[in-house]
Amino acid sequence: MSEMTHVPVMAREVMEILPLRPGATAVDGTLGLAGHSLMMADRISPGGLLVGLDWDSSMLAEARQRLSGVADVDIKLFQCDYRELRDKLTSACSEAGRAPAADAVLLDLGLNNAQIEDGSRGISFKNEGDLDMRMDRSSGEPASALLNRISPLELEKALWNFGDERWAKRIAQVVVERRRTEPLRTTADLVDCVMAAIPSAKRDKRIHPATRTFQAIRILVNGELDDLEGAIFDAGLCLAVGGVMVTLSYHSGEDRAAKVAIKKLSGSGNFESIYKKPLRPQADEIAVNGKARSAVMRAVRRIKEENQS
Image (cartoon, rainbow, N blue to C red):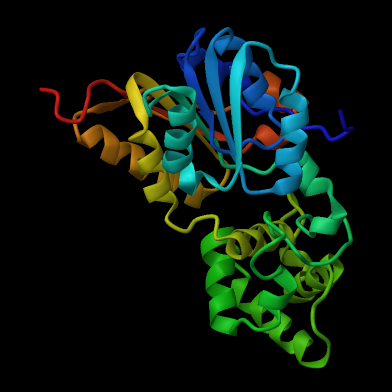
Protein backbone atom coordinates (compact mmCIF):
# COMPACT_ATOMS: atom_id res chain seq x y z
CA MET A 1 0.00 0.00 0.00
CA SER A 2 1.31 3.47 -0.87
CA GLU A 3 2.04 6.27 1.55
CA MET A 4 -0.83 8.42 0.23
CA THR A 5 -3.14 9.31 3.07
CA HIS A 6 -6.63 10.70 3.41
CA VAL A 7 -8.88 10.82 6.47
CA PRO A 8 -12.50 10.19 5.43
CA VAL A 9 -14.68 13.12 6.44
CA MET A 10 -17.61 12.66 8.86
CA ALA A 11 -17.15 8.89 8.67
CA ARG A 12 -18.89 8.42 12.02
CA GLU A 13 -22.05 10.19 10.88
CA VAL A 14 -22.01 8.62 7.42
CA MET A 15 -21.75 5.07 8.75
CA GLU A 16 -24.47 5.69 11.32
CA ILE A 17 -27.08 6.77 8.75
CA LEU A 18 -26.32 4.48 5.80
CA PRO A 19 -28.27 1.20 6.10
CA LEU A 20 -25.24 -1.03 5.67
CA ARG A 21 -25.76 -4.69 6.50
CA PRO A 22 -24.45 -8.05 5.25
CA GLY A 23 -25.55 -8.64 1.67
CA ALA A 24 -26.41 -4.99 0.93
CA THR A 25 -25.58 -3.10 -2.26
CA ALA A 26 -23.53 0.04 -1.61
CA VAL A 27 -22.23 2.70 -4.01
CA ASP A 28 -19.35 5.07 -3.41
CA GLY A 29 -19.71 7.58 -6.21
CA THR A 30 -16.47 9.38 -5.36
CA LEU A 31 -14.10 6.59 -4.40
CA GLY A 32 -10.85 8.50 -3.84
CA LEU A 33 -8.50 6.51 -1.60
CA ALA A 34 -11.37 4.24 -0.49
CA GLY A 35 -11.50 5.52 3.08
CA HIS A 36 -15.29 5.43 3.27
CA SER A 37 -15.49 2.38 0.99
CA LEU A 38 -13.37 0.22 3.27
CA MET A 39 -15.78 0.95 6.11
CA MET A 40 -18.78 0.29 3.87
CA ALA A 41 -17.31 -3.00 2.65
CA ASP A 42 -16.74 -4.18 6.21
CA ARG A 43 -20.41 -3.63 7.02
CA ILE A 44 -21.89 -5.30 3.92
CA SER A 45 -19.75 -8.44 4.29
CA PRO A 46 -20.50 -11.23 3.73
CA GLY A 47 -22.39 -11.25 0.45
CA GLY A 48 -22.49 -7.56 -0.29
CA LEU A 49 -21.86 -5.66 -3.52
CA LEU A 50 -19.70 -2.53 -3.48
CA VAL A 51 -19.71 -0.31 -6.57
CA GLY A 52 -17.02 2.37 -6.69
CA LEU A 53 -16.57 5.22 -9.16
CA ASP A 54 -13.72 7.68 -9.64
CA TRP A 55 -12.68 9.72 -12.69
CA ASP A 56 -9.05 9.87 -11.55
CA SER A 57 -7.13 6.82 -12.84
CA SER A 58 -4.38 7.07 -10.21
CA MET A 59 -6.90 7.28 -7.36
CA LEU A 60 -8.81 4.35 -8.81
CA ALA A 61 -5.65 2.23 -8.97
CA GLU A 62 -4.81 3.09 -5.38
CA ALA A 63 -8.35 2.33 -4.22
CA ARG A 64 -8.28 -1.00 -6.04
CA GLN A 65 -5.12 -1.94 -4.15
CA ARG A 66 -6.58 -0.89 -0.80
CA LEU A 67 -9.77 -2.84 -1.38
CA SER A 68 -7.96 -5.95 -2.60
CA GLY A 69 -7.87 -7.43 0.90
CA VAL A 70 -11.62 -7.19 1.45
CA ALA A 71 -13.22 -10.62 1.82
CA ASP A 72 -16.70 -11.84 0.95
CA VAL A 73 -17.74 -8.68 -0.92
CA ASP A 74 -18.21 -8.39 -4.68
CA ILE A 75 -16.36 -5.21 -5.70
CA LYS A 76 -16.93 -3.44 -9.03
CA LEU A 77 -14.82 -0.36 -9.78
CA PHE A 78 -15.23 2.03 -12.71
CA GLN A 79 -13.23 4.98 -14.01
CA CYS A 80 -15.90 7.63 -14.49
CA ASP A 81 -17.58 10.27 -12.41
CA TYR A 82 -20.82 10.00 -10.48
CA ARG A 83 -22.86 11.37 -13.40
CA GLU A 84 -22.63 7.83 -14.78
CA LEU A 85 -23.68 6.25 -11.47
CA ARG A 86 -27.00 4.85 -12.70
CA ASP A 87 -25.47 3.12 -15.74
CA LYS A 88 -22.56 1.66 -13.78
CA LEU A 89 -24.79 0.45 -10.95
CA THR A 90 -27.10 -1.23 -13.47
CA SER A 91 -24.12 -2.89 -15.15
CA ALA A 92 -22.61 -4.07 -11.87
CA CYS A 93 -25.91 -5.40 -10.53
CA SER A 94 -26.66 -7.20 -13.80
CA GLU A 95 -23.27 -8.92 -13.67
CA ALA A 96 -23.84 -9.85 -10.02
CA GLY A 97 -27.38 -11.08 -10.64
CA ARG A 98 -28.98 -8.40 -8.47
CA ALA A 99 -31.81 -5.93 -8.88
CA PRO A 100 -30.43 -2.57 -10.13
CA ALA A 101 -30.95 -0.63 -6.92
CA ALA A 102 -28.69 0.53 -4.09
CA ASP A 103 -29.23 0.29 -0.35
CA ALA A 104 -26.63 2.99 0.24
CA VAL A 105 -25.14 5.75 -1.93
CA LEU A 106 -22.36 8.10 -0.85
CA LEU A 107 -21.30 11.19 -2.80
CA ASP A 108 -18.33 12.83 -1.09
CA LEU A 109 -17.75 15.83 -3.36
CA GLY A 110 -14.43 16.91 -1.87
CA LEU A 111 -10.85 16.29 -2.93
CA ASN A 112 -8.59 14.01 -0.97
CA ASN A 113 -5.22 14.95 0.49
CA ALA A 114 -3.27 12.95 -2.05
CA GLN A 115 -4.72 14.98 -4.90
CA ILE A 116 -4.12 18.28 -3.13
CA GLU A 117 -0.56 17.49 -2.11
CA ASP A 118 0.56 16.09 -5.47
CA GLY A 119 2.48 19.02 -6.93
CA SER A 120 2.26 17.58 -10.46
CA ARG A 121 -1.49 18.16 -10.43
CA GLY A 122 -1.24 21.90 -9.83
CA ILE A 123 -4.30 21.89 -7.60
CA SER A 124 -2.73 23.55 -4.57
CA PHE A 125 -0.99 26.91 -4.31
CA LYS A 126 1.21 25.33 -1.61
CA ASN A 127 3.08 23.14 -4.09
CA GLU A 128 4.78 24.56 -7.15
CA GLY A 129 4.12 22.59 -10.30
CA ASP A 130 2.49 22.72 -13.71
CA LEU A 131 -0.85 24.48 -13.67
CA ASP A 132 -2.96 21.44 -14.60
CA MET A 133 -5.77 20.82 -12.07
CA ARG A 134 -7.52 18.10 -14.13
CA MET A 135 -8.97 15.18 -12.19
CA ASP A 136 -8.85 13.04 -15.34
CA ARG A 137 -5.54 13.99 -16.91
CA SER A 138 -6.28 11.93 -20.02
CA SER A 139 -8.89 14.38 -21.28
CA GLY A 140 -9.83 18.05 -21.32
CA GLU A 141 -7.50 21.04 -21.14
CA PRO A 142 -5.23 21.95 -18.23
CA ALA A 143 -5.81 25.09 -16.20
CA SER A 144 -2.86 26.82 -17.88
CA ALA A 145 -4.45 26.49 -21.34
CA LEU A 146 -7.80 27.68 -20.05
CA LEU A 147 -6.32 30.70 -18.24
CA ASN A 148 -4.32 31.71 -21.29
CA ARG A 149 -7.39 31.87 -23.54
CA ILE A 150 -10.43 32.68 -21.38
CA SER A 151 -12.01 36.14 -21.67
CA PRO A 152 -11.67 38.54 -18.72
CA LEU A 153 -15.44 38.48 -18.13
CA GLU A 154 -15.65 34.68 -18.18
CA LEU A 155 -12.78 34.46 -15.71
CA GLU A 156 -14.30 37.09 -13.45
CA LYS A 157 -17.63 35.21 -13.39
CA ALA A 158 -15.90 31.91 -12.60
CA LEU A 159 -13.92 33.42 -9.73
CA TRP A 160 -17.06 34.97 -8.28
CA ASN A 161 -19.46 32.06 -8.84
CA PHE A 162 -17.13 29.20 -7.94
CA GLY A 163 -14.82 30.86 -5.43
CA ASP A 164 -16.89 33.64 -3.86
CA GLU A 165 -13.86 35.82 -4.65
CA ARG A 166 -14.68 39.51 -4.13
CA TRP A 167 -11.51 40.54 -5.97
CA ALA A 168 -12.59 38.54 -9.03
CA LYS A 169 -12.56 41.45 -11.48
CA ARG A 170 -9.10 42.66 -10.50
CA ILE A 171 -7.61 39.14 -10.50
CA ALA A 172 -9.05 38.53 -13.97
CA GLN A 173 -7.51 41.80 -15.18
CA VAL A 174 -4.08 40.89 -13.83
CA VAL A 175 -4.20 37.40 -15.39
CA VAL A 176 -5.01 38.90 -18.79
CA GLU A 177 -2.30 41.57 -18.43
CA ARG A 178 0.36 39.02 -17.43
CA ARG A 179 -0.44 36.51 -20.18
CA ARG A 180 0.09 39.14 -22.88
CA THR A 181 3.81 39.04 -22.25
CA GLU A 182 4.24 35.55 -20.81
CA PRO A 183 1.67 32.71 -20.65
CA LEU A 184 0.80 31.29 -17.23
CA ARG A 185 2.40 27.88 -16.81
CA THR A 186 2.85 27.09 -13.11
CA THR A 187 0.97 27.36 -9.84
CA ALA A 188 3.42 30.08 -8.81
CA ASP A 189 2.39 32.13 -11.86
CA LEU A 190 -1.24 32.10 -10.74
CA VAL A 191 -0.34 32.86 -7.12
CA ASP A 192 1.70 35.85 -8.31
CA CYS A 193 -1.32 37.17 -10.22
CA VAL A 194 -3.53 36.91 -7.13
CA MET A 195 -0.98 38.59 -4.87
CA ALA A 196 -0.55 41.41 -7.38
CA ALA A 197 -4.32 41.91 -7.61
CA ILE A 198 -5.22 41.99 -3.91
CA PRO A 199 -3.71 44.82 -1.82
CA SER A 200 -1.90 43.43 1.21
CA ALA A 201 -4.06 45.45 3.61
CA LYS A 202 -7.22 43.90 2.14
CA ARG A 203 -6.18 40.24 2.25
CA ASP A 204 -8.14 37.76 4.33
CA LYS A 205 -5.96 36.89 7.31
CA ARG A 206 -7.72 33.55 7.89
CA ILE A 207 -6.84 31.90 4.58
CA HIS A 208 -4.20 32.26 1.89
CA PRO A 209 -5.22 34.94 -0.66
CA ALA A 210 -5.06 32.41 -3.51
CA THR A 211 -7.37 29.84 -1.87
CA ARG A 212 -10.59 30.98 -3.53
CA THR A 213 -8.99 31.49 -6.94
CA PHE A 214 -7.47 28.00 -7.01
CA GLN A 215 -10.79 26.48 -5.92
CA ALA A 216 -12.69 28.36 -8.62
CA ILE A 217 -10.29 27.45 -11.42
CA ARG A 218 -10.25 23.78 -10.37
CA ILE A 219 -14.05 23.67 -10.43
CA LEU A 220 -14.10 25.34 -13.84
CA VAL A 221 -11.44 23.06 -15.36
CA ASN A 222 -13.24 19.90 -14.21
CA GLY A 223 -16.81 21.07 -14.72
CA GLU A 224 -17.49 20.03 -11.14
CA LEU A 225 -20.79 21.89 -10.90
CA ASP A 226 -22.03 21.00 -14.39
CA ASP A 227 -25.48 19.49 -13.88
CA LEU A 228 -24.48 18.52 -10.34
CA GLU A 229 -28.05 18.94 -9.14
CA GLY A 230 -29.30 16.57 -11.86
CA ALA A 231 -26.57 14.05 -11.09
CA ILE A 232 -27.45 13.98 -7.38
CA PHE A 233 -31.16 13.69 -8.18
CA ASP A 234 -30.47 10.81 -10.57
CA ALA A 235 -28.29 9.06 -7.98
CA GLY A 236 -31.15 9.28 -5.49
CA LEU A 237 -33.48 7.57 -7.95
CA CYS A 238 -31.15 4.55 -7.82
CA LEU A 239 -32.07 3.82 -4.20
CA ALA A 240 -34.07 0.79 -3.18
CA VAL A 241 -36.95 1.30 -0.74
CA GLY A 242 -35.34 1.99 2.63
CA GLY A 243 -32.11 3.00 0.93
CA VAL A 244 -30.24 6.17 1.90
CA MET A 245 -28.09 8.60 -0.06
CA VAL A 246 -25.58 10.85 1.72
CA THR A 247 -23.90 13.89 0.19
CA LEU A 248 -20.85 15.64 1.59
CA SER A 249 -20.29 19.15 0.20
CA TYR A 250 -17.46 21.62 0.79
CA HIS A 251 -18.49 24.62 -1.28
CA SER A 252 -21.68 26.69 -1.39
CA GLY A 253 -22.34 25.70 -5.02
CA GLU A 254 -22.05 22.00 -4.22
CA ASP A 255 -24.29 22.25 -1.18
CA ARG A 256 -26.87 24.31 -3.07
CA ALA A 257 -27.11 21.59 -5.71
CA ALA A 258 -27.43 18.86 -3.07
CA LYS A 259 -30.09 20.81 -1.18
CA VAL A 260 -32.20 21.41 -4.28
CA ALA A 261 -31.86 17.83 -5.53
CA ILE A 262 -32.90 16.38 -2.18
CA LYS A 263 -35.80 18.82 -1.97
CA LYS A 264 -37.01 17.69 -5.39
CA LEU A 265 -36.70 14.03 -4.43
CA SER A 266 -38.63 14.63 -1.21
CA GLY A 267 -41.30 16.58 -3.08
CA SER A 268 -42.11 13.51 -5.18
CA GLY A 269 -43.56 11.76 -2.15
CA ASN A 270 -41.28 8.76 -2.66
CA PHE A 271 -38.39 10.11 -0.56
CA GLU A 272 -37.87 11.90 2.73
CA SER A 273 -35.10 14.26 3.76
CA ILE A 274 -33.51 12.83 6.89
CA TYR A 275 -32.24 16.03 8.51
CA LYS A 276 -34.13 19.30 8.93
CA LYS A 277 -30.76 21.03 9.01
CA PRO A 278 -27.61 19.60 7.45
CA LEU A 279 -25.00 18.09 9.75
CA ARG A 280 -21.59 19.64 10.26
CA PRO A 281 -18.44 17.95 11.58
CA GLN A 282 -18.03 17.85 15.33
CA ALA A 283 -15.27 19.73 17.13
CA ASP A 284 -13.25 16.61 17.91
CA GLU A 285 -13.05 15.71 14.22
CA ILE A 286 -12.06 19.23 13.15
CA ALA A 287 -9.32 19.20 15.80
CA VAL A 288 -7.60 16.25 14.11
CA ASN A 289 -8.67 16.91 10.50
CA GLY A 290 -8.88 20.60 9.73
CA LYS A 291 -9.90 19.90 6.13
CA ALA A 292 -13.27 18.66 7.43
CA ARG A 293 -14.15 22.12 8.72
CA SER A 294 -16.19 23.19 5.69
CA ALA A 295 -18.07 19.90 5.23
CA VAL A 296 -21.86 19.88 5.02
CA MET A 297 -23.70 16.56 5.18
CA ARG A 298 -27.20 15.95 3.83
CA ALA A 299 -29.13 12.69 3.52
CA VAL A 300 -32.30 11.40 1.87
CA ARG A 301 -34.17 8.09 2.20
CA ARG A 302 -36.44 6.35 -0.32
CA ILE A 303 -39.69 5.45 1.44
CA LYS A 304 -41.64 3.87 -1.42
CA GLU A 305 -41.48 2.84 -5.06
CA GLU A 306 -42.25 5.27 -7.86
CA ASN A 307 -45.91 4.41 -8.38
CA GLN A 308 -46.65 3.00 -4.97
CA SER A 309 -49.61 4.66 -3.25
